[in-house]
Length: 470
Ligand SMILES: NC(=O)C1=CN([C@@H]2O[C@H](COP(=O)(O)OP(=O)(O)OC[C@H]3O[C@@H](n4cnc5c(N)ncnc54)[C@H](O)[C@@H]3O)[C@@H](O)[C@H]2O)C=CC1
Ligand SMILES: O=C([O-])CC(=O)C(=O)O
Image 1 (spheres, helix red, strand yellow):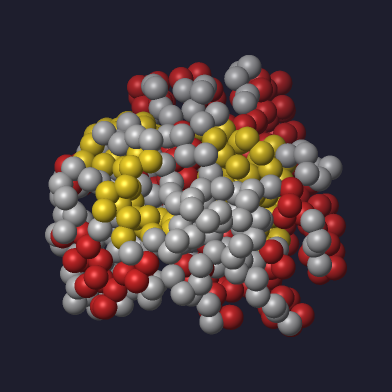
Image 2: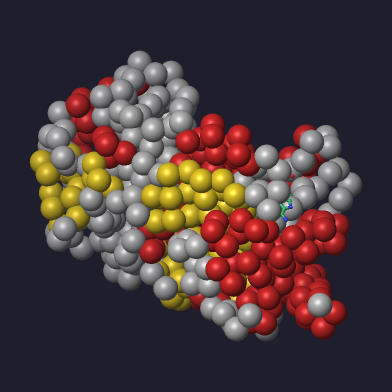
């Protein structure tokens, strides 16, 4: 193993053979191959992330950057970016993701990522052989090699809830976060006390009630909003509008006042309406920056990737399906024809997968039988989106995620599609995803527009009516 330094960014390179079990499917030489989500597994008590590899078949391994490990089993968050999105892999270029680094990973986390990889772990996503190799690789790592930069401040509004709590945990594990502010109207003090015992570097503070919102939001880089009520069986997301519209409006007003430059991630449903509400509120406050307002639709992508991988017997870490439109029923439109790696589906498979992805939220609501909607997978998805945003803020130039944002790709003012995120927010929309759609996708796109338009207008009308009345 050798330490490879590119500019000021340290990475570790290891021979391809080490990961041959893992990467049986290298990214295709395809100029459109933008964002393979190599979600990497981690064994017990480990924290690292694996990245890309060069044409010369060496791999770049970097740590702690886009990954958080769960305490018990493998999990990571994060899309992995690619060194170049426009060209096929050149001969000598090493594909790495850059990250600023000041703090040693070992310092930030007593998860003891390198020495505690349990090569006998049954839960290893990689399997024992690979894990053993990883273990050996890590334990041979010279000190001071793995570094991370915990410097971003994140606020979670609704942090005591079903999504808020696991999201707070995953955020607490991010090597990029220095300050974690938890806000809720319910008992968030206990959540913060609990989390603050984890010896990861971020400082956890709790806030409750309107009076504490200014301090909660001061100097925050990313505000994540999962506050609001979840569905029960028989309800649509739109049935949450009456309660959640007000919650989102009130919270975004505070964000506008106290952290107007932050990225805002809206999770609260109905996303198709709450994002337009947030936009109107920010406009009314004179601080609207469409590049920094995101509706979180990552769960749709996560589900699409999972279901496609299951259906086609693909490795989960290989699969990437863009999902466009909105975040409710038929407005969720997976572009299965754009699946990476390229895979063919029968018409029946397309129909079945599309319907399953569109109804996946309801699948969870029904299974939970009145106890709420997706929380754990949502926290996972939100943490991935958060980590992507933090990477973008940290200067990674290759961050792509699907999100429901202000948009010009259709006649609708908001639309979910894959966007490139940079330091200042959205830099570009990946228009390529809209080229060469299948007839099924074209029909789906036309069909969703009516419902999506109605939901957007409902949000805009609400915000404007509230302004007039209040
Ligand atoms: N965008 C997406 O893909 C998904 C969105 N959701 C949505 O996320 C929202 C939250 O879901 P859960 O966490 O399961 O609900 P939950 O009821 O478990 O938690 C919501 C939390 O928000 C808090 N809250 C309510 N009003 C608040 C206010 N004014 N200020 C601060 N906190 C407030 C509550 O006290 C509670 O702790 C729901 O609207 C749900 O539909 C859920 C899953 C996926
Ligand atoms: O279905 C719900 O109500 C929650 C949600 O948005 C999802 O799971 O996609």
